[in-house]
Image (tube, rainbow, N blue to C red; front, side):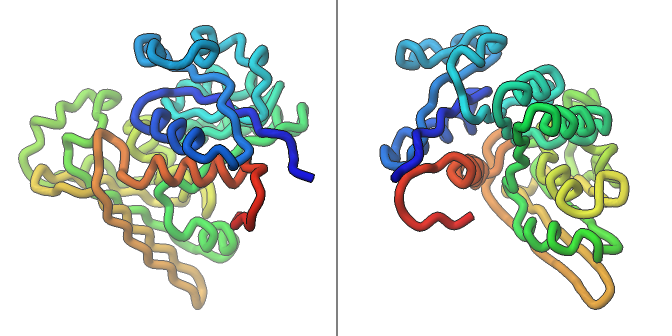
Length: 265
């Protein structure tokens, strides 16, 4: 007998959120139903069907979600993560929130206290399963990201991307340090650190060049008798890679799909 429909709440209705909503709605047999959409910009919600917008996020529980998905900013998890986990499961794509060790601990404690689950999507990380499976083996993990400066949100470091005229290194150091500086750009770094050897031991590099027109993420992991080298190149719009919406939808489907068929987890 098929399970009941999984009720999904979405936080953030920009490029990623609207695409994920479209993918969920496009497959009537996936066993998922969107019960609310929230965004800090109410104008983005004005064309949604009646009953779908949720202006006041504090009322999320009234919609009875089984899973709430954040696709906005790490500030959402800082403010709402533990409150959501008191009531239901929570997936956050802004993985840079976990660079705050106190918040990571609070999330873990909330899930243990309330019997809920917090999910970190793999996003643009190719080879996350290998990083996770061998996290006790790796001696070093390096993440090198290359982007056009116009596709990097530099607001937190007070830098104008248009002022960058040549290849420039914006960061070179532990992953924990890059997350608050570029919180909307380096969720891939954060996911790699969390899956692997942690935010303090993982090494992050962010390079920009106005002559580039794609985003590249390279992962280099080393351990006794074991090496992992992965590089991903993709188009980019805003701060988001072209594959991100489909990747997020795939993770939501892994968690929430109750439809028939063979499911690859």
